Each structure stands twice: as C-alpha cells, then as structure tokens.
Image (cartoon, rainbow, N blue to C red; front, side):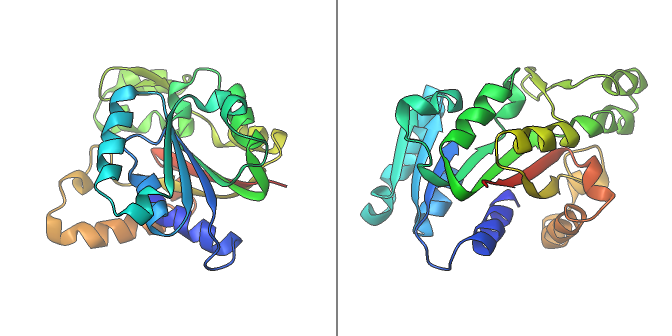
Length: 235
C-alpha cells in the first residue's frame, strides 16, 4: 500500500518518464528500492543492519544488469547524509519505519531534508502516537490502554521498545526543515489489530485492501491508523 502511495505522489509531482534520483534510508531488504529501480529510477539505499544489507545485495544480484546498474547500496545512518551526499542530491527521499527506532528524530529529519532537491518529495512512515491505545483496548488490555494515552512508546513484535510520533508534531517538524506536509495517509486502519481483518480468507484480500486504502484517505478513519504515511515537499 505504501508503494502505491509513493508511486501516486511521484506521478503527481514529476513529469512522466523522468528518471529520478531516489534515496531510501533504512531500506531493509530493498523491496521498495528495487521496485523504483525497475521503474527506471536511480536508487541509493542506506541501511545500518549488515544482515539486511547483505540480503538486499543478494536479491539485487539476481536482477538484470540494467536494474543492478541503477542501484547503489551503502551501510550507514540517515543522520550522516552529509558524509556521503551533496546537498540537494535527491529528488525523492524515503524513510519508512525508521523514525520509530530513533529516540531523537530531529537530526535524522534534518539530514534527510539536507539532501532533498527543491521540489523534491520526502516520504515518511511512522507509528501513530495518537492511536497507541487502540491495540491494547481492542484486546481487552485496559491497563495498557490507559497507559498508552500518555505515552509515545510501544513494544514491537520482537520486544524492542520503540517510539511513536504525533501528526501535529511531525507537521511542525516538516515545516521547520523546509519540507512542509503536503499529503498524508493512514496505514493499517482495519488490519494489524485484533479484528476480523487479520484472519480474512485469501479470496477477500483485494476487498480488504480496497477498504484499507479508502480508510487511509478518509477522515476520521485515517486519524486512528496504526501507521502514518506523511509526504512533504521541499520548498
């Protein structure tokens, strides 16, 4: 779903067929980076985890030469962009599922904005701090639900404590780094929680995705999504 939203934003903001310079910070195993490279864009992926970086390189090695030539992979952190890239080096900067593991997001956001060209697209996927009480509430964990109202921290499936962000705060932060919020979506409005959506049969998958996509664009549903996808545009 995030991939479709990224493609939608690229299609709205850049001429059809333009070969974009893309930076994917925290690229994981490189699925988003490869998708964009297959679409003709030049992609640089940055990942701190050496295991994920190795896996991404192995996947890339199986791609045709033309696609391999469009992808560069580095081990590093989005906060040290100044050590690797010139200011304004990228038309699109992706940072999906990374801010939640950074206790102080401002240096990372500043580093991302620094390498974003004028008119460039900054795409963030974060945990929604305004909806942290929903999961424990829907599973009957009332003590956890009450605690979540006053917290911006949560525990991921691996038992790691992570941080969530509030839409209002990130909107302010994006304006402060010169890439004000242009569009935002909700991700996992119905899925990802204790609900019938989690056990939907395969034949219902397309309908489920259609419902999720509609909810992710519609108030008030998107406001209680588990994740938020925010798109800022460099002035």
